[in-house]
Length: 625
Image (cartoon, rainbow, N blue to C red; front, top):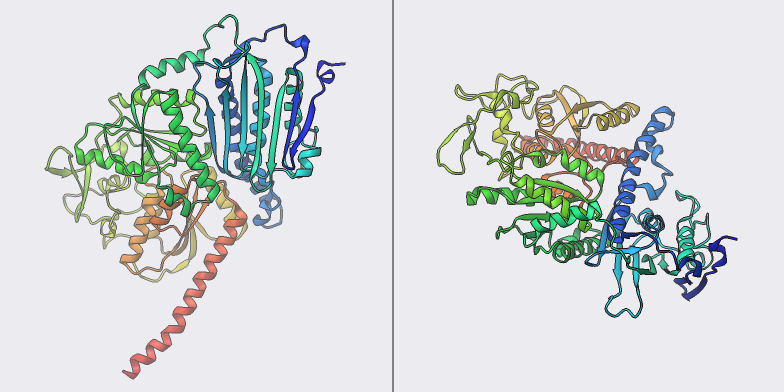
């Protein structure tokens, strides 16, 4: 008989929604001491790994679903039906709340601890689509402890699906048991944690409800090592980073709470607030930094800026303040991405790639070890000569952009190096003069930030002798859909969807190419699928330019749909303000995409019918007059 089977745990129902399981440690396991390890580092590593793995599941499922749909005779929209909801793109916040101990070195089997954290956190992430998941690690005060051991408390709380009272009371700890039999996994999570508790001794308490989520608490009695183990490499690196970060001023820049409550789901607004509080605690208590919170950028000797939600409006404010103040450098800006997909999307954005100021992309969760190492690397980049390059201040004039040095009142035409020139697509789209180079005008759009003011349509006036379609003229070719994305694979997926549904399309690989295609093509472009983060010109700037072009020349408004890896509420808000009609996050739900395109078509046809019906009335009124 195994040790685990000899140690029987006791289970007690505290109420209809809470069950507690307790087990005393086996005497045979008390004598030998397990190797010591850092619980804080181990917990952070497991949470990082599990969440990273869950971030890629929706991407894999989306590509597999489209592949199956293109091989079958059914419509592409049916490919997404029946998908496991636990593998959809998540918009929840992951919060690490680790108490600021001098060290978390305790004796316990490392594998058992990692398995316990992995299963509890994995279950929480699996069933939480929106809201937040919090992992807390705390220890009792050693000064008040009566024995050699310390009570360690690990708590995992989520706002997910929860469990019913009957399942919680009868089957929660049974192996191969899931309340929803269609969910992914085999139902071993809590049973594995139970075995660890029974083998080592401790308590586990589970409180769950379908309306509020689940809270799992583990309590273990652990001892400090008698002999201090050799230095852990990651902790040594962490301590070396603290010397550079200690005392630095860092600003947490976030939207007002009222703004969040109006535009976000209540659970996400609460999750963002908890995430911001945990970030503040980590920076001040662990890294010993001076933290300032603000909803508006004000440079008060700030070294680092952290945006819990990525916001290019904030980045613009930070960079513009540098120009106005004639500052030598702009502070480091850190965007916190919701997941790996959003992080990859942000890193491809022309505004992030700019050397005008240091911008770093981090994915949640933000544990103290990762945060310290990343911020240390940011400060190293901040001191490099090739970073924080002063940008030329562009002023649009009739002949094209001119560059005004921030330190001078004189201006001069801007001519970039030939190696920096993007390939011209057709004809230049600015007015040309004897002293103005068309390639320089194109390069002017490559300034990797939104302009101080939205670009005026006068900057995009077409030359009379060009091959571009004259604004306002009737398009001769059939209407098409313009696919705009810098990622080749994403474009191939969208093209496969268009071909399957017999839709005409045109492709563009960045915002500048989309803008020029929209102006030049003789086909009527009714719909634009616009990626938000691209090189050369981002989707937000391209959308603003298209909207102003339509308004200036009285062109019927096209339907612009954002298809982006950015899932944060701030990205949605910036897209709406730019003139986006619909916002969808990647991986693309082709069922929802098809429905949106159908609604856009119906709305467009209804608008045309209304216009035709009003024309006879207008003609009769003119004849009477």
